Length: 568
Image 1 (tube, rainbow, N blue to C red):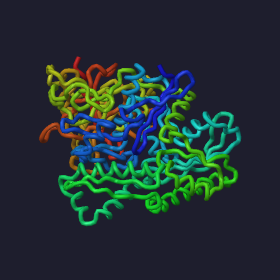
Image 2 (cartoon, one colour; image 1 turned 180 degrees about the horizontal axis):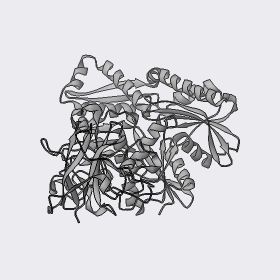
Image 3 (cartoon, helix red, strand yellow; image 1 turned 120 degrees about the vertical axis):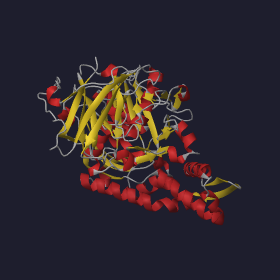
Image 4 (cartoon, helix red, strand yellow; image 1 turned 90 degrees about the vertical axis):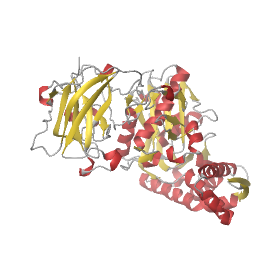
């Protein structure tokens, strides 16, 4: 088995690498290339496709395809995939879970040490959201590392960088740009000053510029691309434009074949035409790098190297403009899409992040598995899942999680189920033992009363197959924030086992003290509120299942909530 795993969840592509016997090795995630597209596709049966498979299906059903969601991390407005809302963090967790499944298939288990990279210019809020995505994917103790630092670590493993040398990392990827200044120390690399970045600038923007060039060249025939039945043609055009961009890195001109409903058209694009499109945004990236140098109080003449990272850094104009502007040596990795993942794998070996259990898989809403982006087993052969929530690798797929000390495992096989006791006694939190080994005290939430502004209350609990099914009510707010926009500032409910306390299950709790919860804000049927994703086998020492009220940012309230005793 490999010694460590590093993952680069990019805006457009995702890469992974392992360290084996001191040597880095790229994990081939796709069938066509080592990297996979950062895409998630939701089928009509609510099962998922990831990567290449998602790309194929998304060409004809673009409304069911989620792309470029890394740009949306931190945005509270969900992305609608099909007709279902997803947060960017949740989609990132799904993508990461696919990587984990592939590593398990190849290695038999995930290495004990795992590192996942993030942009250097992300603040604490976005980094915390990514930490929550790691938890969703089963990586409860993985290390988060900065993308430019990981890139520098990889470069230093192949080229000499002396202690005291200062390098600048210019990272132009598919959707974002990062610039950072680093100094080599005896212990590794130290960040100097403040990283700079442009969150919505990258290769996909250059692709769009080429698309617009083609549309202008088509003239009146462009209307054919906008026909209602031309979604596939538009997707193929974007793929052709991406290929043209990449071809111009080594050639001076290229032909873009545009598949129209009435026949194909060839549009010529020269490198000089392309460079005139991208010169202004590249100038912006160099200005951002200048700001990073100023923040670090470093003159360009002090730089040993400028390291180019990211697929879009291979555009020849990038190195030309950087060399002209900074007058310093520019170094580009032979595989710039791999550099961050390779460096993250090395950093994981040094930092020792913990890995998920080896049985972690991507689970769909039908209970089937997805490996390498393709469904394993026929979802149609299973009964339709009752839950509209998405299941992620045996971990909850609706909640935003932080580092937790336990696992709240949801979902499972939706085969034949047998309902046992359909009634139970509702018990107030204050009457239930909800202490844990990690909490020094218990904060109880009172049950619903006439004086409570908002509260949630259990009504019954039953066992169906391997899950608990709970009916509940809410008073003072509408919990359906994901379905209808909600009301009352988008309050909703958090469900959690009584092995955690009410004061542990929200984002307003210090990260090292948080428990595990799941957001629940969808109805089971007309006017009926049912929660059915708590797995019986994972109750642990819990004696009850609990519910509490949370606000739109998942901050928990002790205003009103209760617990219900778990059936024996």
